Amino acid sequence: MYILIVDDNKELLYSLEKILRNEKYSVDSVSNIEDAYRKIDSKNYNLIILDWILEDGSGVEFLKKIREYGYTTPVMMLSSKNEALDKAKALNCGADDYLEKPFSNIELLARIKAVLRREYSQKNPIISIKGVKLDTLKREVEVDGKKINLSLKEFELLELLMLNADMVLTKFQILEHISKDFDALKGSNIVEAHIKNLRKKIKKDIIETVRGVGYIIKKS
Image 1 (spheres, rainbow, N blue to C red):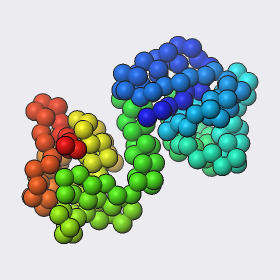
Image 2 (image 1 turned 30 degrees about the vertical axis):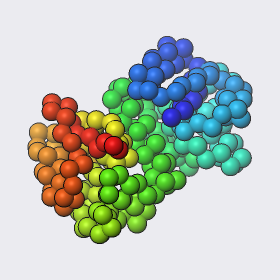
Image 3 (image 1 turned 60 degrees about the vertical axis):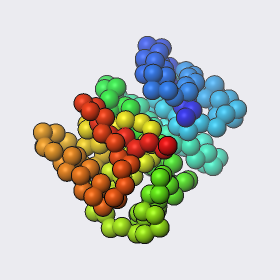
Image 4 (image 1 turned 180 degrees about the vertical axis):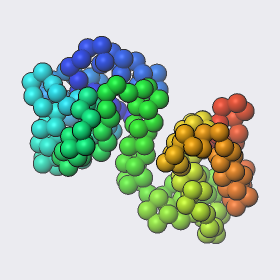
């Protein structure tokens, strides 16, 4: 996965580069709009992390222009602006997500993965692993050619695990994905309950427990 960071804060750039490279992303960074144009002309990125205010102009105006040119790569806006109107402006100009400063590393990585999952599922709607086929558009699941019925949360959980195949997902990451009220549910066993139900319905041993960490689906 290739990510471009556009921000003129050197300390933040360094921090973001380190965080993302530790997560095995390939990262380029620039501090101004002029260099950002050069980068997107020379490489296809999976995500752009874009600051609102840059040394040579507005990140939002840059976003608006590249969308007008037909550039569809997902963009996550970063800004210290916390007004609803500012967020609405960024989203209306084509941002895929908006993250207020300051933010935690955990939140940043979770939001990046969510944006990349959405983009992947739109371009590659069918995921097949070990006889389990999941259609992200039709929201259907087949096991060895036979359709099975899953609840919405079960589907979202299976989709999350399959989109992140070969990656261990923690209970925190899973719960954040399937619940809008993490604080209310963080002490519950809702993740374990959904995993148990999924295993019963799939009837295949593809969801592995990584003791003390979380769960994983391996491609092979």
